[in-house]
Image (cartoon, rainbow, N blue to C red; front, side, top):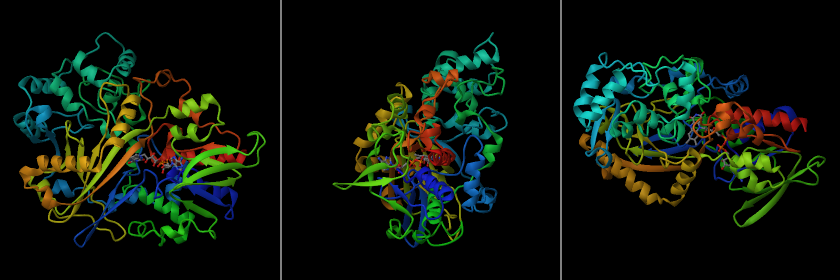
Length: 555
Ligand SMILES: Cc1cc2nc3c(=O)[nH]c(=O)nc-3n(C[C@H](O)[C@H](O)[C@H](O)COP(=O)(O)OP(=O)(O)OC[C@H]3O[C@@H](n4cnc5c(N)ncnc54)[C@H](O)[C@@H]3O)c2cc1C
């Protein structure tokens, strides 16, 4: 297996199931940890232990998990419906905390933290009169011009049809071809400040702002402005799967204190029991992995870290070859291993560089999967009294270095205790998407990746301290005193690229997608990874691992 993320680990699991317990599998990964995007961050603040998610946050997906993915989750012992017993769902609300917006002086003329009257998703049904307190405070305190405030009111309250005379299908077709920013500017005619306010809202989902998200997707996500447009609720052509509401999928949610790193750890324990002690889904949370056990000669399954695969090729004609040769670099040395089959569970854009023998059309399709870059920052604070004083549980910062920050989701399980009192240490999760508004989405991702590569930790740390001080300072926050530790998780190759009706004609037209071309098996090679579904979710990584193993068993 090339790649030790959830896809490579799942592929090893499925392969062993069909090939038998004696089947030998080598998993190679370039990183110094397994799990790929499913990454655990650990902190010790005083005598308290805190966990955070450095990448994948939770079991969730906009569309329901397939039977295959659900079965694996169950096999790992995760009982998704039991999640409410671990989470203190109302903790922050019971302390009077709510989502806020931080207006920064560079974008909005003054620094100001204001309650968020309508977090995205709740907006379409937002009734300004029913939640008038929040709206009143927002309108009184937000450092926006009177025109912008009037336009916000209009955006939520008007029942205007901005595409009169068209059928619902024709409206959706048009909305699929314009960005939400353009819709707001050219159809709703809102003030520029309103566009600036909404610009970063889709960052967590898509890694780009509203300049690169279609108006149709914004409608699906519950953004305001569509209430008078009489759009039939069925998804329109070219909608992103993230933007299609699905009640069944919405109920399938589970968050471990370290995110889906627990899934990776459960998989590793299943594959190499010696490497992670314990036997239950709960005890995985605090279990200490023994990395020395990952790559032992005596084990039929081995995980070799710090090993970058540099070439994969059949030994002979791919049609008749009996073996595949895989070359990988460890430090300055290149090693070679041979296998009967190879699953490429790494990022698709890497595959054309390491696997020259694939057909050109397939290489092109693989290369088009430009991953979405993201920065996931975890800051361990000695306490969160400033959040409490300010009444904030999370902050959306449209002009901030990080566009979102949030107090850790309070989940306790397997002996791990989350922070419950504002005086106790906590992990604050901050998220930035390095993108370049105005460019097509893939170019924004490439530019953002270069920004991530070129930014020093010192610069990121300075921005973190500055942003926290400006946001929380009025609540008594002092970065020098209150920050205990910072972990910056850079994901230059983050989310799988999801197709977008603004740039991807095939997606609008319903013709063959690049990921279908990219994932075709070739000789003794099969291709997995979440990229194979152009879908940035754990279930995609699992589903395509399963498919890839079925394919190699047939070859
Ligand atoms: C920041 C972030 C947050 C996310 N949040 C969620 C979430 O909340 N819920 C959800 O369902 N999904 C989420 N996702 C998506 C989900 O994490 C992924 O879909 C899934 O984990 C991908 O697994 P994978 O094995 O396909 O790929 P990866 O996790 O990327 O694993 C591939 C591995 O291959 C390695 N590799 C690449 N090239 C080589 C090479 N040449 N040699 C050796 N190894 C190589 C990589 O370093 C990596 O370790 C998130 C993704 C990111 C980046």
